[in-house]
Every structure is written in C-alpha cells, then in structure tokens.
Image (cartoon, rainbow, N blue to C red; front, side, top):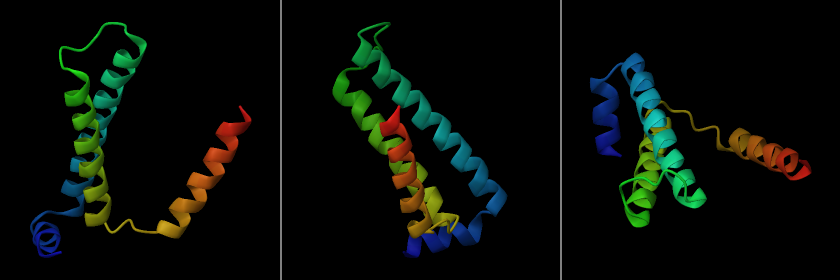
Length: 91
C-alpha cells in the first residue's frame, strides 16, 4: 500500500510503537465501554452502535500499526490464538 509505505518512511519505529500503545489504550477504553453496556452498569453516554463503531475503529487502528511495524508472522499468531482458545475453553 502506497499510504503505508509513505507513513513508514516518515515516522520512526519508535513513533510507530508509541502510536500502537496509544491506539491499544483507546481500544481498551472502547472495550470497557462495551463491558459496561453489556452489564448494564454505569452506562456510557454513547449509544450501543456508537460504542461498537469505536471498538471496530480502534481495532482497525491497532491492526494497521501491526502492519506498519511489519509484525506479520500470521502463522505464529494463529498458533498462539489456537493455544489460547484451547486454554480458555478449559477454564
């Protein structure tokens, strides 16, 4: 992708890691709002659709940064996901 190459050439890896941390924190906040909605406790001021849209957007931001950081060992990631799913299913 032309835009990704442009960004990678303009920002240092350190900047990209910092941006990943920021976007991951925003994803965590969006997920916590969804938790509050699901529990019906301390409801956020936004409606459900807006909260879901925020989760989707922040996930996309995190995924984009993974791509820019060239962290694309999909095979290893799939292996880890399978192992975690198996472990979670046992609990």
